[in-house]
Length: 380
Length: 245
Image (cartoon, rainbow over all chains, first blue to last red; front, top):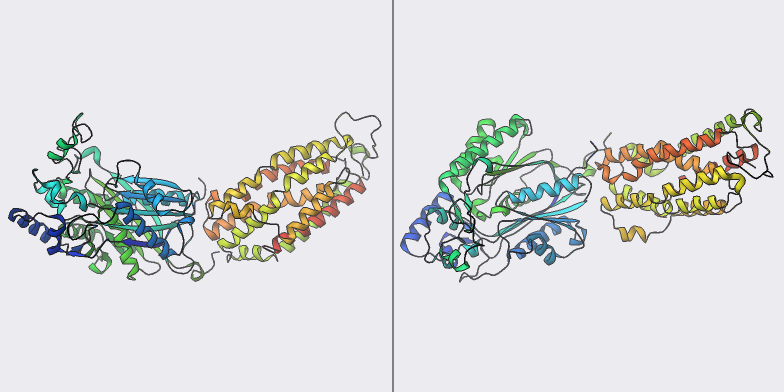
């Protein structure tokens, strides 16, 4: 086994389109002002605890930006934060649930808009955990010494599929309402390098782990299929587009009845990280956890506290309530804010945790805050 | 200055030295290796005072230092195979062994700079800038000396140059690579050039020792070899001292 380099997060950026939209401003953008929908919306908003979010939609609900534009703006913010240019990148890894176009891949579109020189691309697709899958690829290439600098972005523009026109005339149960009043738009990005930032602290990526339990779970969050079993000749690509729309295939749905199972499975994966020693609970200082609603915050928090009795709310960070649930972008949007607002000090450790309901997968990353090289003292 | 050959040579070949039993002086080879060892010791003492190597030893070396080192070395490394080739072309048939060794060595080394260039890119350097670079003062002197010396007929003294350059590769480069990795947290993919030279130059110094010990070096050749080693040792250190100048 050869020697590998380390990988450090040295730049952080995010982009949230438009002004924040409070709970009263949702209807103007997404529609759904009938009494039944209003009642369901009120109930779901109370559950998820989101007070404001951002949509790339104008006051009338018309799109203002492309998903790839959100990604590029977050990337530019991260590059500016690090003080480098797109030309300095050798790889770009992107994560999104649904890009703007079917073909080509999202990373190609983002690279085209971002500019810079020739670079390796990865388009991670999936749902919330895809951003840490993209990070994993970036970190691996940096550790192998193959790329000195990589940018990773998670970006979502879910709002356009949450508008009323998608819901007109279709059966919309809790499986679609739950997401409709929860998801919103945004992008978060990080710069990964083989050396720490020369002049300020960086976050060393100790490891990234991703595990899927799709072998023992049915589909939970979905679009483009009818029901939870894909059938030959019955996906959105097989039937007439009008028929696919009429049957609600283009509506994002989630089987809310299994979400408790998802939380339980996520906690078991966390326990396993503790049991194999990847997480040392006596030296874990911060947890940045993605969850879709505050109902799961409490489940996750209580579960983690079983193994980390000293975990208190000060060491737990989420900005779900103010930034909304931005899917694959969430974890970077939260990390950026935690970083920018000075929550981390050199020597401290951070666990990133992202459960994904799609078909039950979980991603974790462990970070350590390191001081800039000139404050570390010489190694011997 | 003459050498024996192990190949069929023309009958009129000049052979003031012959085989081991008839070597120019009984203690000739031993004396030569002692003299070269003295040059090596002096070189090591000088290297200990070279700023970048001192910083490497002390653990204060930076990634920019490593980048500068690769940048500076590259400008001279690209000349390595050409001067060896030129030397090869100047060995007459009486020096067939040395000609053969030089041709083989030049072939083995002529792609080495590509490894260095990959390392440079892997730590974030620009290939275009690297290739547009110029030699530093020490590299100019070293390269100029090597090409001039290689132009002589039968430039046997260059065995002394090889003793220094291959010795640095075999005995020091891997240590430098390991220390750069340790201090800067570099992957193997970023220190190929220095790591590789431990193996490759180890083999080359083995070949060199075989030639030096073979009894084909007479006293005059030995003097040339030692002098060439002294000059190359000084100029190689100068190359490391004069980074970017």
